[in-house]
Image (tube, rainbow, N blue to C red; front, side, top):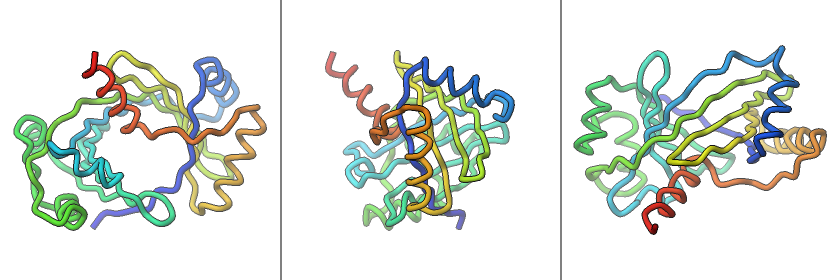
Length: 196
């Protein structure tokens, strides 16, 4: 089974702060690349209720289905590669192929995986900088009619990583306020639009 514990710290930043960071790290950051996250949940939002999220991310080499769920030290991510046909079956009919992710969802919600609903997509332009303390990520994300900017810091150990991220925030004069994650921001915007 393809699983990993993701330990990351993040903060929303302004467009101006994002542009300053991009300029500062321009000589050491990766080329900008695009990620598209497609989000799914049950009709009754069973996964959201369990603070979990299901996405399909398209990258250059194909589709990856990922379940994110809370874990003691971060997020437990279960990954499964799927092909174009499986993605479209999930998106259009709500049917997930069996595999590691469906098995994990069954364990999580305590029943066979019901039909899933396609919620929409979020597109991120991302660049990464490898620091000695961990991986610094700068994201510009688009969903519905919103654009937001985020700094993420991925590390191996939570306590030291938290200190390193706080130091990074302090060095840039940024106030660290733990934001909602991307799928939560996506949900919130979707609900806001639905009420209009």
